[in-house]
Image 1 (cartoon, each protein chain N blue to C red):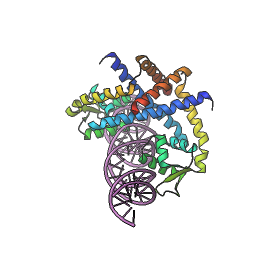
Image 2 (image 1 turned 90 degrees about the vertical axis):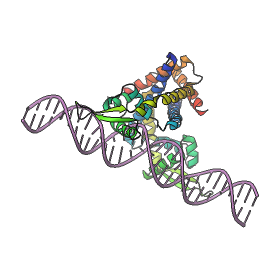
Image 3 (image 1 turned 135 degrees about the vertical axis):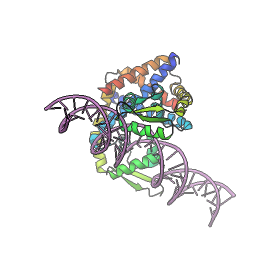
Image 4 (image 1 turned 180 degrees about the horizontal axis):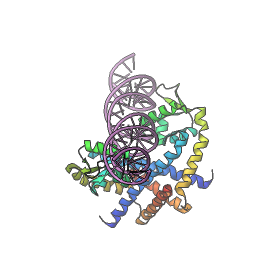
Length: 144
Length: 144
DNA sequence: CTAATATAGTTAGCAGGCTAATTACTTTAA
DNA sequence: TTAAAGTAATTAGCCTGCTAACTATATTAG
């Protein structure tokens, strides 16, 4: 294996390891709120548009319908959101935040901010822009 | 929220989305071999050192013991590896590749290579080094 | 007007991955 | 030499997330 392939292998392994670490670190932080990693993503979507349909939420979150069904059910059981059938189309379900789902935003934002600080500590603004560009490139590559 | 925080939020979301996409894309590719994403990581460790203990494997892979127990069981059921009790310490289990576990290396390497090509397409060697450096920085940050 | 097709969401079943609690065996110290 | 502490691995029970197969409702075309 040549020098370039070795480099690539390093990046890929590093990427996987770092993202796993990120996820775990964030999961640990979220435990204080009795929220699981991924669920915050759904709540985030609802804070930016309550009453969305499940299909819309799937699109925005980039996940498959069964994943969302599952998560919505759990957050409903926790009392953070409710489901209502659409009046115009009986196939459609719309998801709404409860009062508790709304009030959790503050603490969650705080955890999110702190996690970001931790993750990007010591990385210059310029490097952050580069990282963003490279991530976008990879994202685009994988969509083709 | 200021400009800098917005940038940070973007990066974190982008990072999460990109790594999820990477994982899914790779999972799709692995399906051809009836292997699940993550399992290749364990096989990889064994190709680089057959007969390792589970604790050693956990350390190298950066996962928790129950995760490994689970995965080892499944790969054993698939016939790709076997477990043997250590002769000196009856608490210790050592993991060995089967013949089939060995022969799968070729096809898996090929999938791995192809996936990397796909992921890093159009990214210069210099950018790859930068990406590596930034990932390492984040990794270090999250270890503190 | 009805049969075929498309769409929204669910269910079942499997994977990785985790924490908390437990079992089985070793080592250490009183 | 035996009781306490430590270590390796497992079990139980959650979570995200997926695919394949299904149900129920709408739309469209013959």
